[in-house]
Amino acid sequence: MKHPVICERAKGHYCGCSACGGAQHGWTNALLLARDPSPVARQEARDRSDTAWAATRPPVGRRKPSKDRKAAATDSATVDIVDWLSENPDTIDRIQEIGDILAGPVIQELDNRFGGSNPREARRQLTNHFWCDLLVAVAEAIEKFSKAMDRIPEYMTTVILQSRKAEGRGVLLDALVGLAVRTAWEPIKRMIHTVGIEELQRGCRILAVLICPAPENHQAVQDGALLPLAKEGLLETSRERLEQVFPADWVQRLREGLGEA
Image (cartoon, rainbow, N blue to C red; front, side):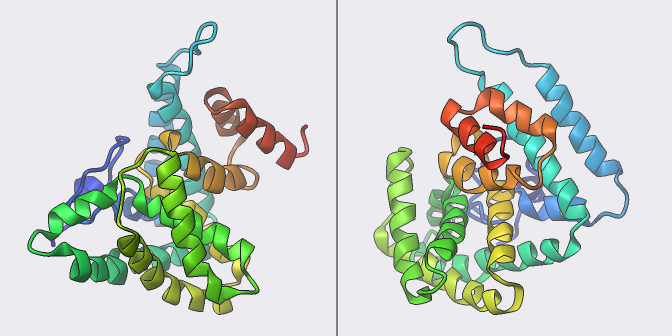
């Protein structure tokens, strides 16, 4: 299927692309920006996120931050990640490799098994934060089972299903999730021996943020990707913005990780 460029360059916080099922949402263009030797486009993205943040106002009293303010905060974090990638080209290649696995063999296997006569409709079901769920589960599973790799696919499947249930996401068949996990895991597992666990985890976490249509509405990405990345790749401005829009327990964990508790 021909993939629309508008999905790859998406600036909004929604994905309904039935061509890729969300597997190419945002991240391909983010990597293009990171690879660009000129900083102009990256600075334009930062200016947009700063302008969006300035256009919002802090909540009054016990009101929660507005959705626009939360979106602007996560956009700021994404810009920081892209800037960090521009200075770490090896990680860009790693993320490209992981992303190509999702957008290639994984989506093809799901089409073959679940696409039926209307693969676009089947793919549309995956746009509701499925890929970022999968990537966060990979990063978590690698850390938990680094010495028991054969248990990882089962664990990842459980994590994804539990996370989606807890956040009220659309229900997906256990078999679909299991097939996606197994198809993604085999080539990703081989990467461990060439790049190491830490680098692979970092790549999955970054891709989870880049591919997620709305990190401000996805707790698994906030906890499993943004939190660890905030400790090493985000500027102070973005961390402060996230602290203003994310729950107090998230802020506490961040500050503990930074040694500010």
